[in-house]
Amino acid sequence: MSLEQLARQAGRAIAATAQFRELVAAEKVFEADREARELVRIAQEDGERLLKIKSSGAEFSEKDQRQIVEVQAKISVNSSIQNLINAQRAYDALVQQVNGWVQAEVTEQRKNA
Image (cartoon, rainbow, N blue to C red):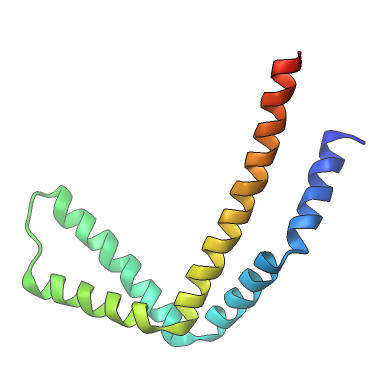
């Protein structure tokens, strides 16, 4: 079996896991939640705006700080966003574990070479 075939087989195995299925389900719920998408959009815009303010040497206004805190508070209680974050973390942990197994095998093969 070629390396590509093995990688594709690993991809299919990962796609069959609960972590992957939960991530896909959480993504669908998030996409259907207009409020969640809007909160994320606002948070991204706030982040970009604050980077510009910071790079110009200016200080954040109290209004800017209040808005960020407000949006973060709404994000922290939005179940669609929180479920997506948790599902992404679980999936990322799975992928890191698989990468660790691959690296461990490569390291072992290096010792035996």
